[in-house]
Amino acid sequence: MTRAVIALGANLGEREVSIADAIADLAAIDGVSIVAQSTLMSTVAVTESGPDDTHPEYLNGVVIVDTTISAHTLLAMLHDIELRHGRVRAERWGDRTLDLDLIVYGDLIENGNLVIPHPRAHERRFVLEPWLSVDPDAIIPARGFVRDLVEVLA
Image (cartoon, rainbow, N blue to C red; front, side):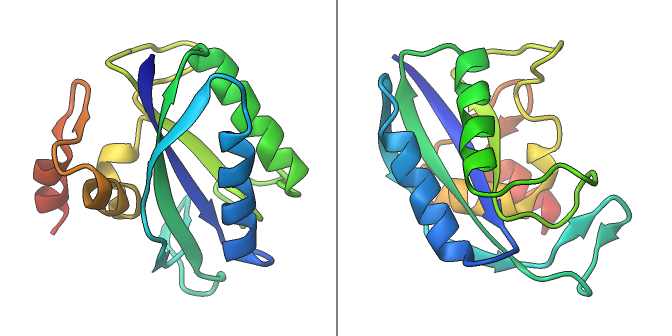
C-alpha cells in the first residue's frame, strides 16, 4: 500500500455535490481506500496572474488514500473522474466544475509526464491547511513538514 494525498476543488456548478461525488468515485476504485477526508474551505480563485475575486470562489479540501495502484494509473483515474463531472481544460488555471490533483504519492519524487510531489502544493494554503487538519505530521517529500510550509505562508 502507498499513501497518497489528493487535493479537490471546484468553483462552478454544485461544488459540494461535485466534490462529494468525486470522493465516492475515488472510494469505488479497486485498490483505493479513503483514509481521511478534510472539511472543505472556501477560497478565492487563483488564476495565472494570482488571486482573482472576480471569479467564483472555490471549495477546496483533500483526501488521503491508501492505494495499490501506480501513481500514473491513479492520476489517469483522477482525470477520468474530472471528465465525468464536466471538467473542461480550455484555459490553464481556469474556472472548473472539478479539479483533482495528485499532491503526493508515498515518498515518490518524479519529474516527467508526472510531476510529483505537485510542483506548487507547498505554496497553496488551500491545499496545505485542509491536509494539515487531517494529518498534523504530513510531509511533502523534498519540501518538508506541511505545518512548517503553512507557517511560511502566514
